[in-house]
Length: 102
Image (cartoon, rainbow, N blue to C red; front, side, top):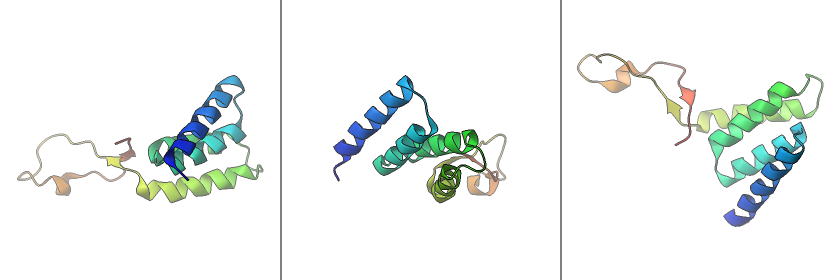
């Protein structure tokens, strides 16, 4: 499929979400954003769906699985403060950086 198809689909899901917010629409929008390559946006949307759905909802495990699949692909931001033992930045990285958009 061409990227333009996903852009159009995402726009329509986003418009639908504004008119009538629903977890199913958010889940579809997250899927669409992932296919467009907008991984951080997709991750945020999957997280929102997973947090809103009750534990027994069959869509919740889908959203949680997608979160787990996306997490390793996300760019991370590592806060840096202070000196770094001779300027070796990789040695100064703090574990647990948060996802960010490029």
